[in-house]
Length: 474
Image 1 (tube, rainbow, N blue to C red):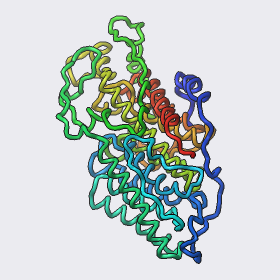
Image 2 (tube, rainbow, N blue to C red):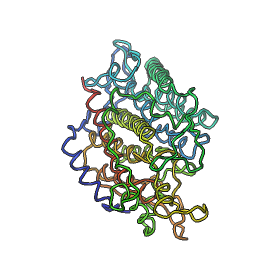
Image 3 (cartoon, rainbow, N blue to C red):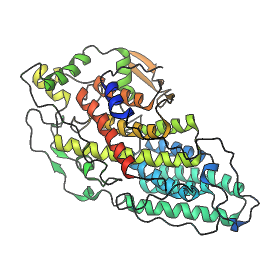
Image 4 (cartoon, rainbow, N blue to C red):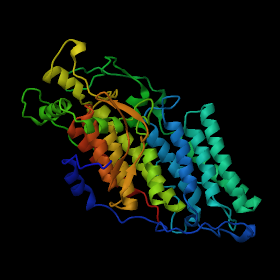
C-alpha cells in the first residue's frame, strides 16, 4: 500500500534540516555484484586473498532473521534494548570483517571506552563470512536474554552457516582461524557492552512532582523501574553524540486556547475524534506492542533486513551499514530517554482529561487508541529513533530508495469491527518512513505534534554527530 505524504509539517523541516547537510554517500564496494571467490585449493599462507567486498551479505541477512525471531514477542521483556543490540552487533560484525577492507579502519579509539580489537595473523588468509558468522553468534548469545530458545536459535544458525563455509573454504586451518578471530572480536565487544549501564544497581527513581504540565504515570505509581528511568544515563557509543540535540518545548499554558501548548494537545484530541481507517491502521502498524509484535523499537531490525534484501550490498557495505545504523539508533535511544526524564512533559491523556474533557470518572476518561508508554511525552521515542535510523541509512544509500515495509504483512488486526491484514507500506525514501512513524504516534493519541516533529530532528542531529565524530575510512 502506498504511503501518502501525510505529515506536511515535518517534510519541509526535513528538507531544510537534512537534505542540504547530507554527506557524500559511503559505498565501499559500490554495491556491485562481485562473485564470491572462496579459498578452496589455495595455500593457507597466501594471505588476505579475498577482500570483504568479494562476499555477499547473506551471512548478515541470516543473522538478522535469527535476531528478529528472538525480538518478536520476546519470552522476557528487555525494555528499550533493541537499539543497543543493533549497535553492538553491528560493531562486532564490522570489526570482524574490516581487516578485509583495505580502505577502512577499526573504529577503536573513536568510541566511548571501546577496547582495542584482536589482530589478524600477518600473512594468513581469513574467510570473512566465517569471521562474521562467529562474531554475530557470540554477540547474540551475550546480548539477548538467555533462554533455551535463544541458545537453540543461535546454535542452529551458526552451525548451518559453518557447514556451508567449511566446504567453501576447503582449508581447515583457515576455517578455524576465521572462527577464532570472529569470536575473539565479539567477546571483546560483549565485555565492553556489559559496562555501559552503571545505573543497573541504582535505587529506583521515585517521582515527586505531580503538578499540571508534568508527566505522572497513568497507574499513579511514582516508583520508576531503573531500566526506563535511568536509560538516559547509559554510556553512549559515540562521545558527544547527544550533545546539543534537544529542542525547546512550548511554555506551559492551560488557559489560552490559542497558545502553542494548548493547541498542541487540542490537536491530538481533535484528531482522535475523527480518525480515519487509514490513520488507525498506521497507528497500529507502528505501535511496537509488547506482545505479538516487535516491542521497544525492535521493528527497525526487520526494516534493516528488508533494506539489505532490496539493495543486496556486498558484505563490506552491509557491515558498515549495520554498525553505523546501530550506533545512531542506540545513541538516539539514550538521548531520547535522557531528555524525557529531564523535561518530564505531560502526556496527551493528562492534559485532555484535566483541561479539554475533564472528568473524575475513570469510566468516561478520554483514551488513545494505543496504550500510552510509562514515561513522559517529549521527545517522542519512536520519532527520535526513526530520525537517527533513517538519517544513517540515507548517508549510506542516498535519499531516492524505493522500498516496501512488510514487517507486519500477514498479521491480522481488527479496526472498526473489520478484521484486516496489516499488509505493507511503500516508501520512496528513508525519511518518508520516519514521517509515518512520527505521525502514527499523534494518530495513536500518545504524543503531541511538537513531540514527534522535534523528536525526528533530535534523532537526525544525533546521527549527524555520529557522522562527524566517527571516521570509518582511513
